[in-house]
Figure 1 (cartoon, rainbow, N blue to C red):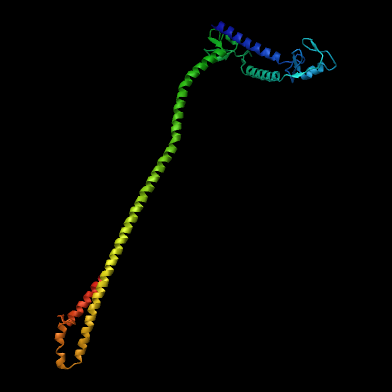
Figure 2 (tube, rainbow, N blue to C red):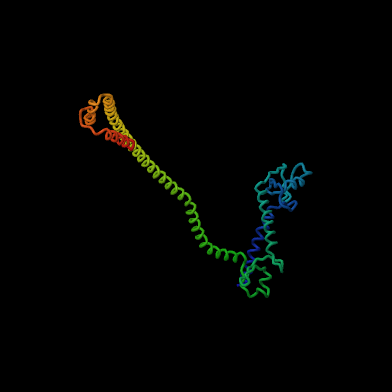
Length: 294
């Protein structure tokens, strides 16, 4: 099992290195052997740095040969190859990534790439570590396979987490809707309170108008009775004033005529029997007090 894993890891690493090397070759200039700068294509189809092919043909006036296949062209034809220029930038980035990964994933003991994973020790190891005494009897696998295996395990753990996340998202959405619902309920209650108090004010206004109307009616009734009492007292006053005038007249008469005062006191101006003089005065005072009490 370990030997098979070693072979698979070696084959995978070799395949990746070969592909990157081929890309670097295609992105390199055949003259300066560096990455192409401002790549141009000539008639035969080969690509070169613009500065390199210009220097190569610097002293020529015709029959311009290709530095690779030696095929000549009659004219100095240089066409920019922008697509190749983009590929050169990609190759540079891949090389930088490869260098970074290589520096970060080197075995600290053997300075080799950590291309295998030891399940017993749960750590990445290089090819030399895998065949050493420490890991020889251990179960090792290519780092990519182990990564994929652990990725699948993490994805299985991810499913319940995503389900929980969805539940929390639904709860959060429900909670976010509650302020709007609360605002709606508060507004409904506010309108209800306003309506109830408007109705209360209307009823109080009606009660106020009723009480004021009743008070006004009572006032008019009392005023009417007071007027009637005042008119009655006026009549009594006139009767008493007339009687007093007669009494004063009798006082000026002779003794015989004065004796006729008693019959006069017993009758009024209308000829009806009347109370005594003192009783008439007391009756007038009582009527006046009753009118004041009303």
